[in-house]
Image 1: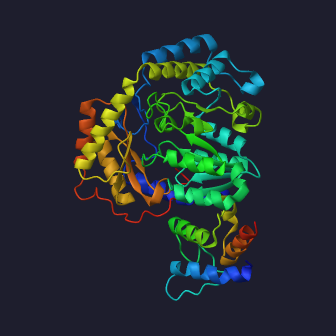
Image 2: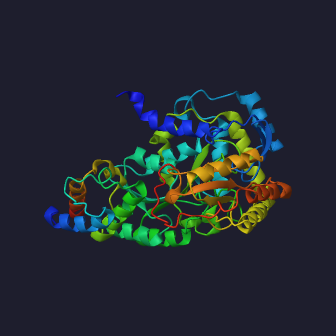
Image 3: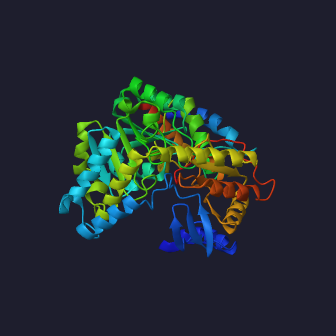
Length: 80
Length: 409
């Protein structure tokens, strides 16, 4: 699955975690802009991991700030 | 921006706590009287938050052994075992803990924290994967990071989630270390070890169990959850601490794998630390003999645990797990948790105040750790002090059991 296929699915998965009217972009910062607390971040990650059937290593989390970062991480993990 | 600016938020939290009159994370024990009593703020206080599960910190045999070692072997070793050599007593302690577990290989570390750092970082390195329970203790997280393995977290005590993640690893599951705890320190719940062993075998992974809070507590001989669940032969490595049921300091790892011995040559927390001091080693050896000879200590612990658990339940508290020596009363928020903790202390009861981020699911907890040395009367006093806390605050208002973020546990 390529990044361009992943991105719309990622937007759909993230949408329930956004406030009404918020428009998700590739540059959206997951913690700073979505206002997620640490428990919500874990919920989001679990949902994404199950959707794409992957496990995101904790080692990689510090490098994931934006939706784009997350999409690229998913692409990398799906490629193995 | 200064290097020290990062401490400003911590300073603000500390100042808030100080305004409330007492800092729950900086309590001074002015005088320790016994395993269950101390003077705090000038007041005689019942200790029910010290992990002194078997109440052996003042046992005369352990004290005498420590005194004799102090006189005969000196105050310290002044260096690491690799550089300065091992004292015969280090090896004797390793033999004692290996014998206790019926395992051929045992390594002793200077603290329990270092045991996890030393074993985990040596066993799983770059190219390996570690699957850890989300509620793992900080020493497990830190040990995993030190080794450089890929770290994946599974949902607390959720075997289906663990299996899903093992399946996702494919062939890499054979180079995967699963890490769980016998009893989890915050809520006092246990790992579903029989089911975990099943998936571990199915996927060819390696399993390590941290028995820090279950050593001396679970199992016919007090070896922990693996013994209680009768799966010891399927657990590749057990780590634990001497600083809870055994009443001293230090940690250990035991294993039936011959390669375990080799981690002495690769484990930085083992190599680059001063070895345990002789008096601590001697006291620990004495205490291991005591818990082997006195299984009734465990019976007292469980009698006391049931007594406190039933008392708090009757008072309307919602508790973190099934009956056990860790009994965590859930409270609605930080403010009421702090107020309740303070009132308990003013009434002569010391428990642990546990608040996020150190707790799972954002819980606020008044955490009790029961001791075999508590008297019936002391347990009654603890129950009474909890019952006297402001009515209506003991119910739990955090309905969402979300996923854990217990990296600071």
